[in-house]
Length: 117
Image (cartoon, rainbow, N blue to C red):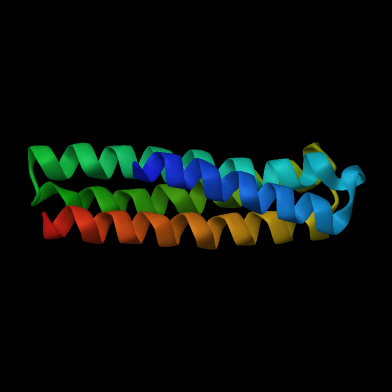
């Protein structure tokens, strides 16, 4: 299976687990918690995969720029979800954190496999 399929699966599992844990009333907060990290992880993986296949040396620069872009995006994303969309903080934070960790683990394993090939 491709890393994107694993990422989508992990995102859905983290959303389902957080929704079960917090109840159906927190479904939108847990969905937002999963969606941001999922979109970023898929985008990062696709860019990293394409860059590595085209020019492996360019991957380091891409990853550094991606790190800065992620910091800015996630800061703004969390602020918007909690203030503008008024989602409850705890269900959002639990879903966001679990999805973030799981998706970055999948991405790291996919990069390891890519480098080994």
